[in-house]
Length: 140
Length: 117
Image (cartoon, rainbow over all chains, first blue to last red; front, side, top):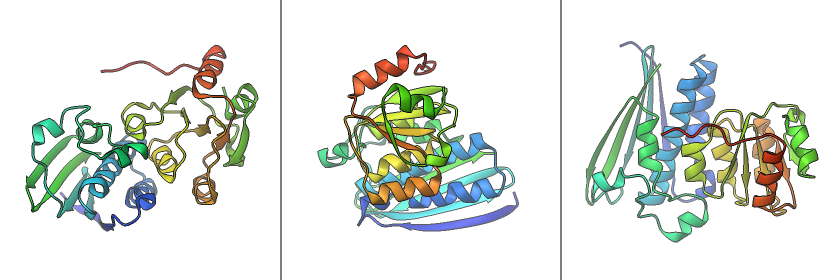
């Protein structure tokens, strides 16, 4: 699978108002590359949800986006607390986000299910106290 | 329906993205919870919300929202207006409350789209 482009971002948890800057940049680049609007929408939603999650739960992290002719791969890696119960976290409506996050409009427990819904495959590797890596593939 | 029609129906004031007020609107989504907007909003949709922070603009960007309507007279700050102008995303503000705003648009033929899943 020939790789066309690789993009790397560092997500900082210092300023919640800046959440989504990486997703915004990826979206613009995919548009320039002429990727279909449907695929761009999926990537934008999945990546933005992931970016928000990293800021809410994991003190930020790193994002790697690989674009090939067949697919877009999103790898979100953090050194956060890890996910205690992945099965529960995947249930729509289940959330461990604090009230402060809910007052900002997030933390409804829709993030991970929505990431899965918008990707063709999603894999979560997590270890308590070590961190979480989410890999999503969106076919184009 | 266009964004201009919504301005008239809701007696709203445009405050950003003023070059895009003839954009076509097919559906609407009313929520203060951006998580739900990201999970449920349809294409060519306007977002009605009483939540007023930069993540509302980001969410709209990711979802290709046609316009944001801030209800209950909420007014975005300079940062949000600048973000929206850069994205050419219309922002309106209306003094109507959420329920009345949704009701007025529904009365004029705008719906929330088909329920899936």
